[in-house]
Image (cartoon, rainbow, N blue to C red; front, side):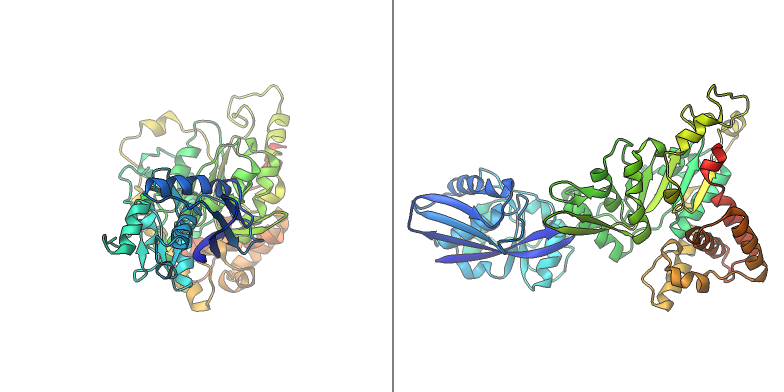
Length: 508
């Protein structure tokens, strides 16, 4: 007799159905798992054997063969433990096989039969719902699975015994309830920042239009402090965005207690991060920092200290909003629509351009340091601002600056304008930074005076086609903050001032 249990294999954020086929038959006593299992899946036979014994069941002295179909799809992870165990129980008659037909199963087994949480429960639940099936998962992952569909049948036992008792009718498992993580009470506030009015204005513009921004300034000027407060002025995630972000966090195993949050992700990897850590990869092609920051902020501090090859690997995600990881045996695509915020010192010693500072190496120090960031990478950044050192007068100034709540209101209004505009045009974009190139001339068309000014500025600054479009997008955001339909000359002038000169030219 062959029993069947459905589980899933993950390819990107997509959950592909896998048929777990278990046969208990005559032959040499053995427990074999086939179907391209990785080491974790191959070792599941020992966990299953111990869990069944702890639950009062013993494997018969027969040959047990487990096939994971389709056999040419690589199987990775520990979530195959529970479907294999249930398949064995159905094959030996400990469970009725027809009761398992309506569920997708995943979970890791302990040696005592308890179930441990696994990564990817939310995408698995969405995949199961698409197949018209329920879901069986560990109790600690039940709240996460409950977000897939309010009407979906979900069982979240704590052990193999609980699940067996539920199917026998001696114990009833209640459906888990979805849970949300509350907003932290100690979020950084812009009111804590003294001075830096120009930088705070640029931060507001970046938040309103989802634009990438680079801050250049000496150590201690407050660049990291400003970046950490961007999350406090961004609007909460929309339901669709929340689902996308949570699916990626689920695959990475970063949903604590299965709780979802509507706060936009803020990722700040160290400058020693490898290419696989930043864009994704490794043996299982897991999502990297750029994908885990999807619909949120990726903050790169000490930008030139990152390896140049690592920074240039971000050029495709910044342009297309997705990361493609290609391997010899499979190809995975992760969504990576991020807002990049970067910070850097003007030179290695950090004080180039400051009054009274004289570097022994002269301008060459700053030129070599800033040349570690390539021109094509910089061309994808909309705002480049200088953040000067804060003076003692700024620090001694009484009172507090404008709060994050006040700035967040203006940002929310500007984003509402953009969302309504794109919805009316039937475009999937949500912010001006995501505006398709084909619509830039239509949506961000300047008036006559602005058109003449932009033509002269583009020739003087030698803007690339991408740079020209990004100036228009930035000007459109400035007009939205002012509540105006037409992009004027003042909006273009301010947009060009934030774009600044190439840092390589500044260092020369």
